[in-house]
Image (cartoon, rainbow, N blue to C red):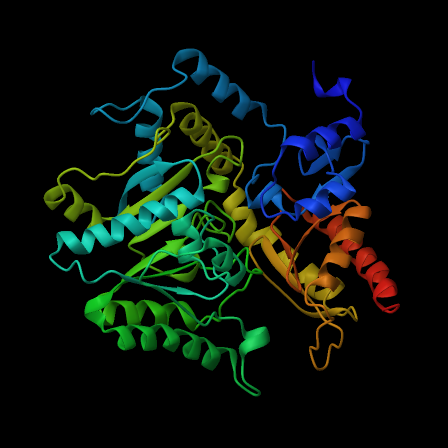
Length: 459
């Protein structure tokens, strides 16, 4: 029996009876019922009642080449017919992860040539944590194991990923984090810049928080700093231009490894293959997932720099770490075809030279002036809209986050899927968006803001 044999109410009842959703208030969900998304095409998703919704989040930051791509389905089918699965243990490999690793080394920063596979960004960050600490042990410095991260950073939902991240509510539910991880201020000028402080000076001050944490612990105790080039799930927080060069200088000064989390920003999101290239960063590790397969298969890839890889190969012996589905042949086949499509259609260049600049211009000209908007910002095809009660003072609505949820719900009602994160609306659309799609999105967001403003005035 297929889902078409069930009514919406029946599907919602079954969902409530058996399905625990991620990041969800389950009591609230079961009172309202899930929206059931049944199919999708190009930049649009469709629910069980036939509503067409422009997807402004690329699924969950991942469906970069849009929905309905037969080439990816065909690649998966062909690989499943030939070899649906074999592991990468026992000194074995299969062709597709071998070829994908070669491709990733070609598009990654020049000093990165090795890849370790998992099934999610969380797994990639777990692996990165293990590998970085193992590296320093191999170098005879096992005490050099502290990781510096940032408040409101997001690095996954496993125990290690939650510990690396800086989300307080997640930490409270964890009941015991991985030790020796500390969190410093984030480069979020909208809320944290001092009166009269320039973006340049704020970026240097935010970077100094990393140096202060290194000096407090002692450089001989600090293994690495981890950060998203652009903080995604925390609200598309784009650092000032001065931030990353200074962070990199600090890490090199104290011989601290630099770990980039590009689970969201990788594979064209910022107008380069990796945001490391956008910001001129030379990291020791890059964690990636999501857009690697455009979400058509679960796959993550930890890209490992030559310094760490050399120590692992020459001094490491057996690395006691891995997953059943590391280098899954079907997922890797889909990733190879996905990267081929991104290249063939010139999507990275298009984001950098065309749709990215147009997206930024449209947000500034058509959204930034609204009474509910304190700031818009974007880089490539990811953006944020700060929701405020007062534009001049940047005062927020209370309780925190309630206004953004109101905007989100009206946006969906207008056929526009956005995400509310705290008091911030965030966008990360498929890379196939065009100028016309961006115009459609701004029109629908504008209507949602107007409707939300009418509701919020009643409070």
